[in-house]
Image (cartoon, rainbow, N blue to C red; front, side, top):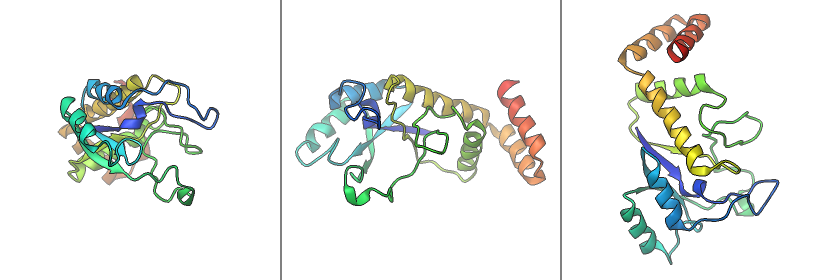
Length: 189
């Protein structure tokens, strides 16, 4: 699996309670250095106008090379534009309670769904990036993102060929009790 993070995840993020955010804003280089220090992270997503613009393309390119990171996408800045206020360009891929985009560490709430998601991605042969859409407002950002990636790696280790065959059989049988039992035994022994 290839892991990436949105660069701004490592910066100061404002929230509905404190628009100035709870942390100091690190430089782009400090954020890229922190990204590179998270084991498994090989790429970053940059937000256009926030992280990369016409006046800093060369600088960002040099920093990406310096920290051996790839730019896996440039996200259009639809966040701070009033015309995009209805969320037409958003997807919620972080963990949450479903009533709000809580930006929680992967697996905090929906363990079974993450196992199923990674099962299906492996089943269809997905080889693209797994990027963390998680803004740790109050948590230490690098640690929260590291935990999300480590959680996905742990699920990936569970999904060996034997487990993949077992899940296929469970899906074919359609027995929720057996499926839940399989997950409990596989995770907790």
